[in-house]
Image 1 (cartoon, rainbow, N blue to C red):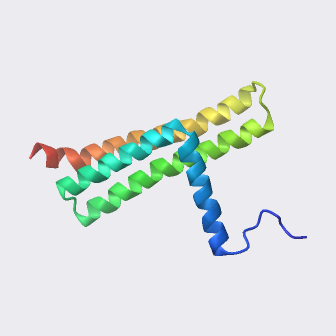
Image 2 (image 1 turned 30 degrees about the vertical axis):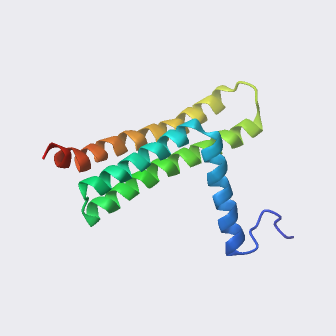
Image 3 (image 1 turned 30 degrees about the horizontal axis):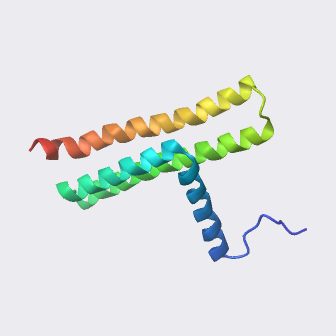
Length: 122
């Protein structure tokens, strides 16, 4: 039995992935804010001339926040598909997914401070 959801080739898989990212950017206010923050951080990193190691850390942090937000969105959409009625267990699952985004964002702010503050203060 053929899986109708299976990508037929890499190009199709890449197109579908980009479509998911595009959908999330268009529909999720928080991801738009996070993308803007990422752009600001990248511009600041260019201005402050981060080292290659600092750039790697910055990209990992940016990636972790965007990843967490996209996964959170996917979880919320799947749970909404299950039911539109209030369900305490679904609320808990959504809160947990949202908490993962919050942790990732808080850690990124701390790491941003560690990367940028010493250079700004000098």
